[in-house]
Length: 220
Image (cartoon, rainbow, N blue to C red; front, side):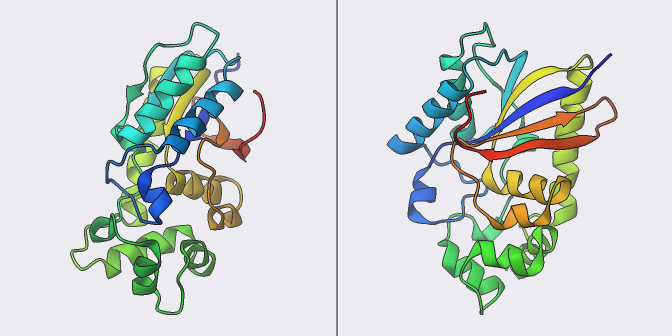
């Protein structure tokens, strides 16, 4: 019997901090008008998928995106998402809310791009550098980040032992990190599209496989 869970992992729609080029982390920022359209577009592309359950991070940009997706669904999927704190964005600590170029140049004075930072140091080491360079050392390092992400996926497996289709709306840096760990480290060096879909399969032993990554066009 195939007990794999199909997780349709979606990045939230554009927010004002996305528009302004700022690190968001755990800052709770609303969707822009374009962000609402991103969410509705994802909903249109996923409207034929029957979701056995739906989840989002507990930050409003993820929850609202999930709600727009469910509103468009044609297959008697759940009416509302359940929030899971484990799937919040990476916590950048003192750097949350600051301009991206300013933060990156603090981590490495020779760089101004988050993409280049990951390209140079790798996904996990970049998190460790954020922790090290944070004046208050509040930012998550890689072990802290993966502890909660792994806990989140384990909870999904425990809640859905017979498999099924799950909607999960989360965040760009989370999806980058998953791509780097479970498919190709280079995947973390490119931005995730707002409203893009990544399909993940998880078996009963918590083995995770990325089937499709950062798709912005497919009708599922």
